[in-house]
Image 1 (tube, rainbow over the protein chains, first blue to last red):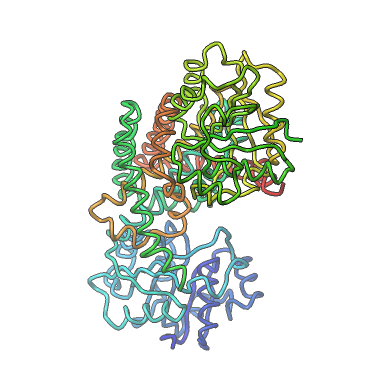
Image 2 (cartoon, each protein chain N blue to C red):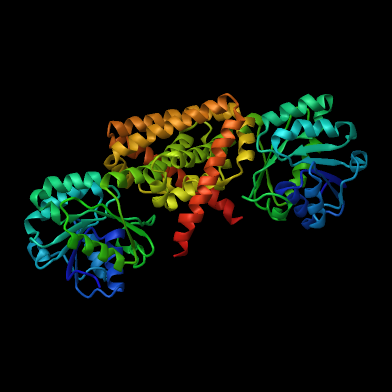
Length: 296
Length: 296
């Protein structure tokens, strides 16, 4: 059972809208109220049946609300929390869905201050290459991981409520520290985006660009798929996770310099060792984690 | 009509075997003879009906042959040509299928010498992630490009015969210089392989490797798909295309250093400009080249 009675979702786009639809599918019968800076998006979400109530004054919106979910771009976390802080009751639970966690926690601490215990940071690992309430689907989180990055101040019952919320959407709960979370996603998600954007930009600006694109094929297509993602969203994620991104990028650049030297020295043995290690590691990952996940 | 009467294919793996099957499908009724260092592979290809004749002495193999196709790893080009040179008739046409061209041309010139006019370098842009004669299929080249990198010595009729050969397999003929060919594929194929191998190797060797792989998802999967390719084959391609790879890699590393500096300076505007340029360029490529190709 969904452990809440009235849920306010701030940001009714792909993530916020999909959460609302997934909760309804799971049998949640309480209220779901939408909160949006852009009233037109809220009207569309209301017309789509994603939220029950749209556009009420904040006092009314938060009346009896026992959960606030932030599903806005991470850069807006502080301003949204400032706006709603006066309306938060003493027993409300607040959570978010942001792709980065240490900066969200920093902002939440600054704004919520002594109320920080109510804030349970979370990140559902799911997405589509589409945006807006029209992109929302009720199975977006089914079989996907949701990472909760508990704070020392969080109470056990509040943590369990947020875990229950996502479990009701079909998600599998994982726990990481905010630091580990940001380190992990800098490496396996944020850096690859940056590398793919960089390669396409490099090819596009090359004097032989037309010829290069003419012969780019399926390898290039898959390698650069993530370079079709939203530039604004990825600008924000890059800035939000700057510190970890720089650390991982510098380390990866060292690996590339090493490979570059092996190429220059025509060290076939050294190159093959790296290629074979990568091929083996990827196969292990596919067999033990990625494909077993897909089967769920 | 296939413009040959007796074809010797050296190397009956995925490419050589698929060529034989595609020619048969196109109605070629002449002889197809297989040549293999590994007699066991040749027997398997013969049993699969890919080649008519297997394992004859070289003199017999080349008796009346009017085409020799090299479908061996590029590094073996020189040794194979040395072995067969004494058996090449004055009117035979020789071609190859290698992923790199300048080094193949250099080897061919060294071995064939005054006979170089008979050698028409070619590269069918097609592949699968499987090897051996069992992986061969008759539609591997259908709708795919074949790049021919003409030499000044080549005669027009010999060039047209090789173009005709691949057109009969459903391939679309493109012409590039060997230099441009190697530059193009260094950028859109060879370098992405190296970057993907490098990223998986980096993650696998990291002290937090297990945690990283645990949360790697679809973006990582597609970005690194090419890191599941054969390490031996990609070692050879890397070495064969060393010069162009180094040039492109150094230029791309400069782009990455620039992006790294934007991240360090938290220059959101500069980052978004690069991301947006890449997103737009990739969409243009998909719309004008890649997707129109898929429809064929």
